[in-house]
Length: 88
Image 1 (spheres, rainbow, N blue to C red):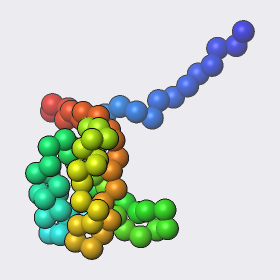
Image 2: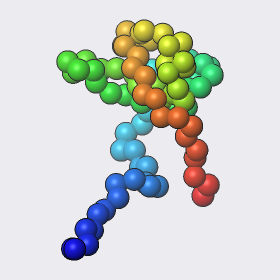
Image 3: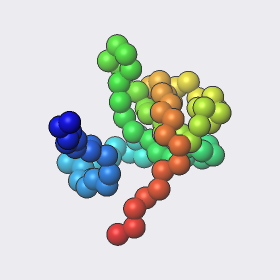
């Protein structure tokens, strides 16, 4: 039987943003970060291409506590579980 070789797309990655985070996003991160269980905030798009805030949350119960909109954008929950930052 031939051995399959696979590659992994997971693991530690380097983050080097090419643009500064906007003041609006910083404000949204601060607001959503006050909700217990929110582990991060990003920007994304919904199914029809409208801009959204993506809230990375520990579980579905946290997702249910999120506001529907912040700063005119929908808030979409992404259940990730716990997220740990890797030490330097």
